[in-house]
Length: 224
Image 1 (cartoon, rainbow, N blue to C red):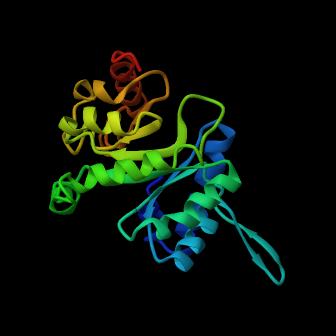
Image 2 (cartoon, rainbow, N blue to C red):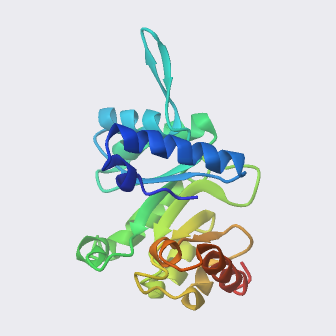
Image 3 (cartoon, helix red, strand yellow):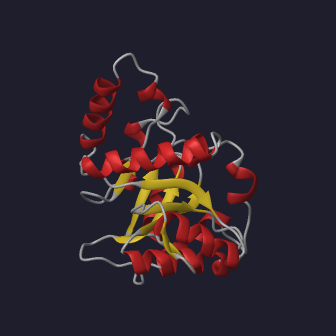
């Protein structure tokens, strides 16, 4: 499950309480939780975000538990030191991160496709994600250092998979944003190698359960 934090935070304290309830329900259902907040800041603030989503905050009156997510989406554009607190928190918690590499919105091209020393910036970011793979390695083939790669630009998938062979790719943009499941085959290199997400197209369906099942069947048809 991938709750979009902004949709809860816009409601203030009641929204955060609702988010905690949603996360608890996901836990009861045996689901993993990806906190989709795209956090990124100078290190001291990034550390607070890390504690809020993946860890806990120590106070003179005892520890205050954070959300307890299994992973979080993070913004790398402030540089490696801004990611470090989030990476360290993920290591400590046995959690993961999904770094924004090439997002699904049209404006992503303005920066993420710009030249960065002879290659697009998104390729530079992809190399940095791959550099984190060992630190967030688990018992399986794939690392907890994952990447967000928009399904709306499948032409980048082959190269980004080549640069990040151990990353789980989080693929937003299917459905309402126009991305096609059938164009995503290059992202998949085995079970668990990529996660296709859809929100509005399922939530707005007359039968969300049937819409989710139909999407799952289409993804599995890729050999995922």
